[in-house]
Image 1 (cartoon, rainbow, N blue to C red):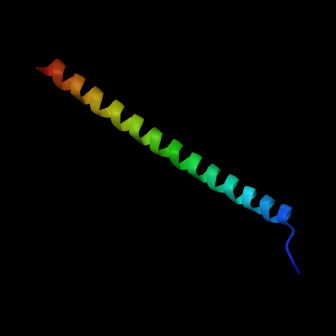
Image 2 (image 1 turned 45 degrees about the horizontal axis):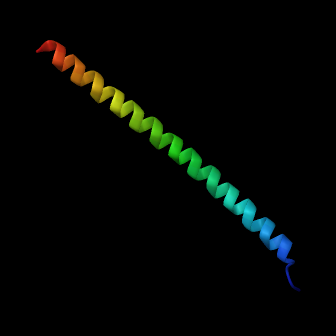
Image 3 (image 1 turned 135 degrees about the vertical axis):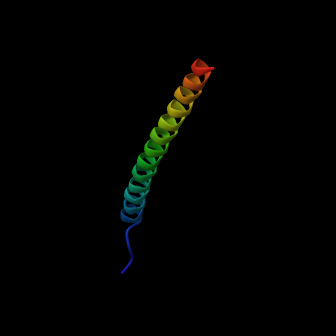
Length: 52
């Protein structure tokens, strides 16, 4: 019982799409985290700079 190449390709594409979606979500989370972190450190530096 052979699996049709098209079916295999389709399954592979679905898998890739799921992986891509997952990666996109992870990247968005990382980007958000980095942005917040940078924003925080910059505002801290500005506060310190103003105090001096």
